[in-house]
Picture 1 (cartoon, rainbow, N blue to C red):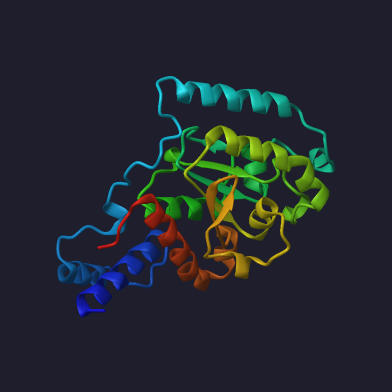
Picture 2 (cartoon, rainbow, N blue to C red):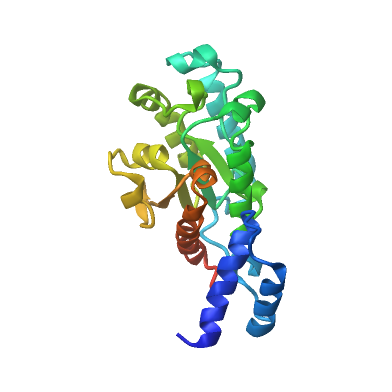
Length: 249
């Protein structure tokens, strides 16, 4: 690899870390790298070309919104498992019904339970930064969880809770028909693939779910506890960006 290519890779990594809130890299370093790399755009600046559009025809977006609304109505004031007993709000999911990228976590936390929206706490802020580092806006993606109600104390969902709720998630995926799914964390990846394999061996490799490529990676909450794992997530995200057609130059 030529020196310029090495510098460019470092530049991309620094920019990603900066987007995630890592402040230990002086801005002067980024500016110096910019001057070396030149005027070529980084991956986060390059517009994402079209994947097969999940809303190819006029009215498709409205239809998907209607289908999601009907699915939410089907769930209703759910008491199908014990999680309902202590929840404040059921957290269905949010975002673009025609999203090309869908993020799936394990379940709502405290902030999500209070607001009724997915990924709005500290982990949600970090997820938003990851989305931005991919060159996307949060309103362009769809975000959901395996279970729709907060497990007490933010514990992992129990197998029977996952089994009760997973069909609703599968229906969301079917309606949205994203181009790629990013499974955030062990519970999400294991639930989607019906495996006991650990996230450390699942992450970093595309797998298929009903014909949709899925990239498992670490949950943003894990990154808050172990910031060094951000480099690993960046590698996983780069693979998704490549699939979307974002080329690092």
